[in-house]
Image (cartoon, rainbow, N blue to C red; front, side, top):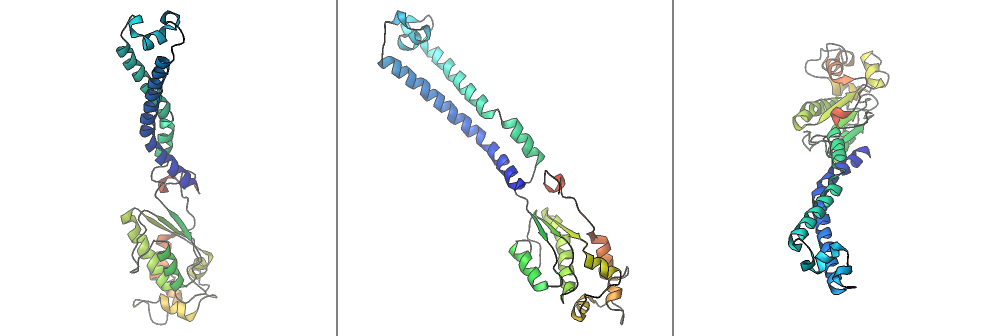
Length: 249
């Protein structure tokens, strides 16, 4: 909601110049209609009219030319309209600068995938973050995966590989993939495999996995996933102005 509101503020600044022109035209038309009204309805002799009206209704009664005065009045009306229309502009542009890039940036939070690779692909594709080939298509969007990728399901290996790939590709488009540690990642790092299935453990193996070591080696400091989790994932994240959010969360 905050991002949408700030987006409207940014877009609103683009309307000030057209509004100023419109107000200037309205002021000019009002001035012309006032002159026609006075010309059609002469309530009294010229010498009894206010001096300003004398110049508009009977220019010969004025000391200076009415054409020059009309130009001055038009310039004054246009300047007033511009000042009124542009008065809020510094405030709005300041807010827009403080929230630079927020209008078009999207932030997504996805958690508890638990080895369900089929629905993981459906979610990321439906959100517009991943293409059919597994490539990043989210542009400058931010994806926050809040942990619990492994356990319970049978295909956490493909999910880890996909998220790591998206994490590498997203910055090239101005995007970002943030991976948080869940309690199930911590359990596996500590050797607690009580929620793991055989199929899931098999999905984590690679050609470099020593024979007979299995899941324990994969999550160790020497295993490909253990290294990746320690390098890529984090316990917490603060999303703030650097990601385009004026109020950190």
